[in-house]
Image 1 (cartoon, rainbow, N blue to C red):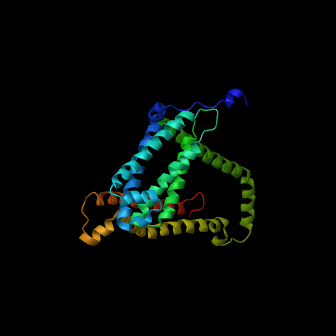
Image 2 (cartoon, rainbow, N blue to C red; image 1 turned 90 degrees about the vertical axis):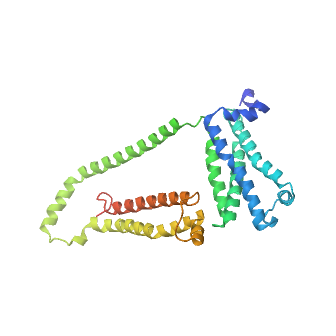
Length: 300
């Protein structure tokens, strides 16, 4: 490497640190979407402190702040600090993405994902839906994958670019299907003569039963798997709806006020989620049933 490439990249000024993230629309949107994470983390930390006491918190400084009368000062600092951090992270990414030296966006992605995972852990632990540690690890991993892929880019993200990428993917899949079909038809032309000879030979021999045909024997396993998948989704759907009702709180609401669910801020989102889940399950069941009747790759 030349001495020019080894030259250290210039550091950000204070003004760039707090303003550079606003220049690109997608970075600005990403920062604003992650801003509520600090507020959510601080809110559910206080809620866990009120319900479980200070023993749940492993950080002695946070425990001391929650036990004091100035806990609201810690709440404000905890909520606003993540916004400042993610804002500086966006500015750092824009400042170093075209640098000739290696940046530290992977470390930034790891810190952001850890904070998101901790916030998810507090939310899951407060509602006690499923093990909070597993949920925190899951959200940490998903956030790291997304953040690392975004902060590793050298060009900007746009809706037009996403549509072009999606069109490119669908076009490639469409071309793959066409090539696959053309290869099948080409192989069919080559074996047409052999099939005619086989038909002439089989006409001279006694007719075999329908169960001896290879097409039927090879189609049945696929058909059964598709039908079993449709039945499994149909059986699993009510259990998922009950699980959804427990998460959203509609089940507890019905236990208190009876089977009549009023249309309020609690039941409306739960109803929309349930309706969307039913649509997704129904579409999947219909897809499996239609695949079991498909005549191309192993249907009836």
